[in-house]
Length: 349
Ligand code: NAD
Ligand code: UDP
Ligand code: UDP
Image 1 (cartoon, protein in one colour):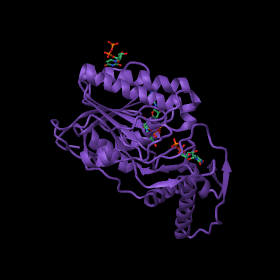
Image 2: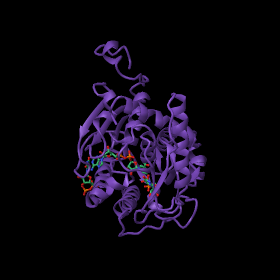
Image 3: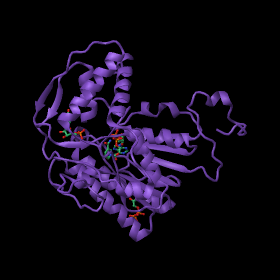
Image 4: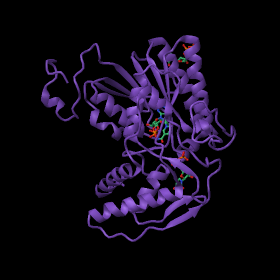
């Protein structure tokens, strides 16, 4: 922070991570909805460190204050408890609209609320973008492609979604949110960006939110059996959260208004991924001098409408943003294993 601002002493700020000084002409007022969630909190960290003013809007349904606690009290940071289903007024230059539960157990817990969040929440944030002329970025998802018949999935694939299945509240919610976004773009000239995010993992992911990466790591660390749903032949491509944040910020600051896939292109069957996690956990434990018995795999029923395969075609992100992932799955999983181990040592898991 700029030391010439006489009202703020260095000691007041020394408890915060360092932030870059930006002259007021470059410093943006940025609203991050869902900023207390897993992805949102990493985005907030990066935007704060870049020197911007960040307001987090979150109802703490799946997120938590603790993810952004280290910024509370910083003059560039503000946190507002608010549900995006209700209108909200603020003046800002950019909006990253992430508010929406993302894990299947969470978004299926109250399917109607999930649809309301996607539809009414996005409507309100687009209304806000229209009034303030802020640039608007929505976090969409690879789920708009459903159980894809085209592989890997490019942005011009229209998808294969069951509109009445148990995942529909999320998939169709995001599809209509994209439709609204392009409606405001065409009708009201709202400056929009759409990122289609593929499976993402990393520190601060809720360990009990039921997603495969957190489940497998926690199970392996506790010496429990890894739960593979179905026969484990379905595939996913997992990206580390820092790569995603690079892509989101690059997209926001580009001139690309078409949807852009951001995801890792290394594809694993869930069975292979279970082995990767088991190996990485064994490696980390061995380095820490801990003997572990080999973990076993147990097979559980496959949830309804579970996509058979998923891998992004990231040609567009490479061409228009110069973006490509830098974290291999083994590197990312190792970081996450160490993060969960540290939490366990603190008794926080
Ligand atoms: P998350 O559940 O950790 O974060 C979502 C945040 O939104 C939470 O802090 C939650 O409290 C908040 N929220 C939910 N409903 C809200 C409401 N009505 N009003 C205000 N706040 C609300 O999930 P995440 O993994 O961080 O996902 C963030 C965004 O990225 C979501 O839009 C999700 O659809 C998208 N996404 C994530 C992934 C992934 O693999 N993590 C993949 C594709 C898309
Ligand atoms: N909205 C909001 N904050 C604003 C501006 C609008 O939450 O700063 C909401 C508004 O209440 C409405 C939605 O965004 O529900 C869409 O706004 P728009 O102006 O496009 O539509 P209208 O209000 O004309 O229906
Ligand atoms: N999955 C699994 N075991 C688990 C959790 C999930 O085999 O403990 C499977 C799940 O059925 C899906 C894949 O792993 O095929 C990814 O699941 P996740 O919920 O992480 O993400 P999504 O299905 O939304 O891609």
